[in-house]
Amino acid sequence: MSDTAERVALACPSCAPATQTVHEVLTATGAQYTVRCTECDHTHKTRIEEETTIDIDVVVSQDGESFTSSAEVPAEETLAVGEEFVLDTPEALMTVRITSLELSEQRRREAATAEDVETIWTREVDNVPVNVTVHPRDGTHDDSRSIKVYVPGDFEFTIGETESFGEDEFTIKGLNVREDAVGYDRDSLDHDGDSVVAKDLKRVYAWDENTTAWSAW
Ligand SMILES: [Zn+2]
Image (cartoon, rainbow, N blue to C red; front, side, top):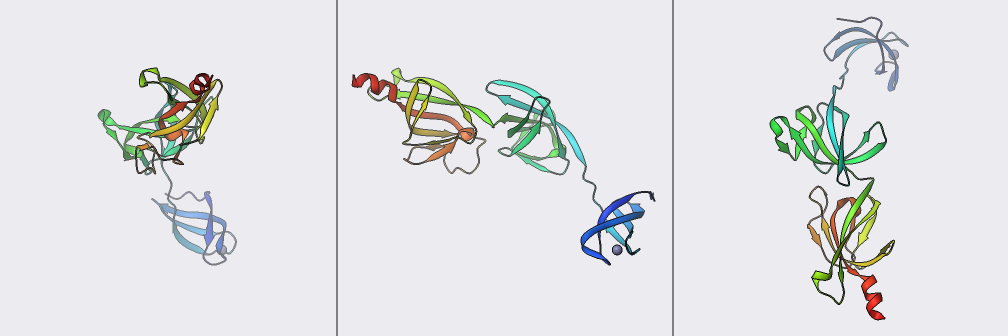
């Protein structure tokens, strides 16, 4: 039924087609509204879609730890693995990337309509840990070591470039891309100049520059 007190801002075809004026709602049947412009008294019909939003559980993974929060999402929106959104948690605003969508009965999908999703699995991508396997230039693979570096999600790792993190210095020779990263035609990059941002990286392979420095002496 109509709510005569309701007022909405709408374009008026008579006096303000390009802007908005205050309209009084005369009747409303579903999304079909009859409204009257308060500026010129022109009465017209229009559709006003009210977007339904739903709360969905969001599990956020951060460097091995995880916590559960929730997000308000338009019910009709399509969600997909690889998409990023800003999550408002009690602690902080953070950018997260969808890694999996869980539907009822623990079914998992790459993409789904929000209203079908029970849990959005994500990981934080503002700051990320990156696994680096460092090989000595003159040693065997048995001598390789694995380290973890912490960088902003947009930090770029480029093959052929030398990076320093604290005591560690290494030259990048290979980059492995994560399954939830979009826009790469290969999972594994090994050409000079190829680059991948930290949040898209599963692992970096590098030559140890520390070892080289030592063996030079
Ligand atoms: Zn008007």
